[in-house]
Image (cartoon, rainbow, N blue to C red; front, side, top):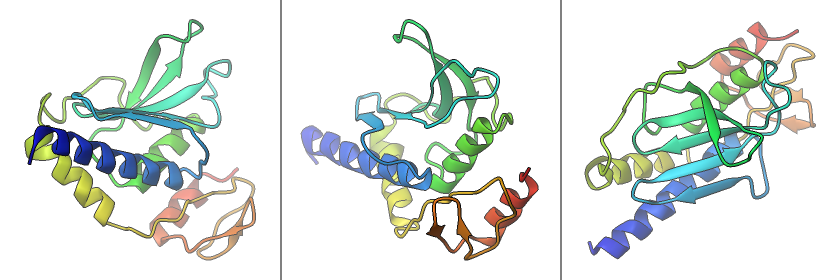
Length: 180
């Protein structure tokens, strides 16, 4: 594969993956940006703010070395301050990224503020492209999980926003533990 074709393949798969994460978060519109690099990275603006930083916008960041993290926008708008990393997998399922983000927005601390290298820079040829392709194949039919914190959620019930979804049992149990 020619380098240019490879770069296009990474860009396509990363764009598809970030779109799936965006869908899992229930976000729409133009809230994300990807750069196929190298190094590959992505930015995804979240709706909402962290309770401990109510005056700061929050975003999810992804890079080919550390995977997903959450960061706060600074007043200058130029820098981002990372507050948590989602450890475990460089390319986790979109639902796992959505859980990470929802827990952050509820004021929980689902990740470590310290970075852990999940891959070495330049690993695109050997690891990144196959991981992205696998993530985009798994669960091709992905529905957003929108959880109402006003009442317990049951599988197949309508939740805030009138969206009826068939929610996996683990997600229902997780959501029920966090109702107020």
